[in-house]
Amino acid sequence: MTNEIKKELTGKEVAAAIMADALARSEKLAAAGHRPTLAVFRIGERPDDVFYEGSIKRHCERAAIDCRCTTLPADVAESEFAELLRSAATNPEIDGIFFFSPLPKTFDEPTLRELIPAAKDVDCLSKASAAAVFCGDESGFAPCTPSAVMEMLRYYQVPLAGKRAVVIGRSLVVGKPLAMLLLAANATVTICHSRTENLAAVCRDADVLLAAVGKARMVTADFVSENQTVIDVGVNADPENPGKMCGDVDYANVLPKVAACTPVPGGVGLVTTATLCRHVIEAAERAAK
Ligand code: NAP
Image (cartoon, rainbow, N blue to C red):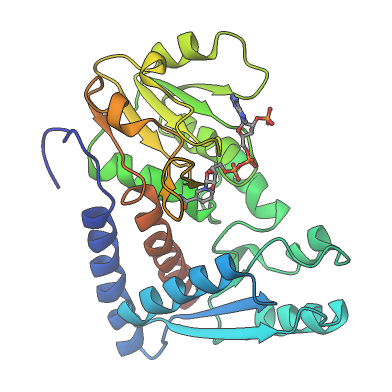
């Protein structure tokens, strides 16, 4: 941790700090007789899901979390999947439940999400968990990506109370919950989206600008001003470098102009899976109480 804000806010050291804390707490729980456990369900072989699952497994191993992965064929019956979720929900050995979304199109995903009890909903898949985030109720878990952003801001001691935070993006998985977490940290929050007028001017006015759009390098130097902290949540295929990825922020041109900015890759994405581990540990600690 540093006392002054660094210009390039990388995710590696934030993730390392979260993982070290998770391991220490996990070992304490294990010594008291309970090994923190995450149940992961994957349907089919979507490459993004397989890649993320690998990352989850590696992180869980490092945090001494028992990661129980169940892979189901793409044509699995909805009733069979529902039964597995019900079983995990009532199994006292399991602290957290996670499945890769979207589920097959024929599944009633909203109903299946509600089978995860709030206490085990470590990535905020159910409406009840989402509602808790909007109510400022900290007994559940916010989605891992917005939580990871808040971890980054905390770690780098970016002031939020009384500051203007502008979030670009209003999805349920990133933009909206992120806005609620920033509000809970006493920021003055503006949410922008595809219909926002004078977007660049609104963004320039922010103390903290957070981009969760899904458009490669859309946030250009024209969107930012000096003294700003810019957080890039975007993960996009890089149109200029096939096979590579880039963020929503035109990093090369934005970084010189602002106080601090997160890179992509190497920023928020690195912290997201570590945050999932932290949520599993927290779920296990709460269950132990
Ligand atoms: P999403 O559901 O597609 O939402 C995108 C949001 O951006 C929408 O609210 C949309 O506005 C807004 N938007 C689109 N074009 C815009 C424009 N020209 N000007 C202003 N706003 C615009 O995407 P998401 O799931 O929230 O993900 C956002 C990004 O975060 C993606 O790049 C995704 O890959 C990344 N992501 C990263 C992580 C991580 O761990 N780092 C995790 C999840 C997602 P409307 O609502 O008006 O359509």
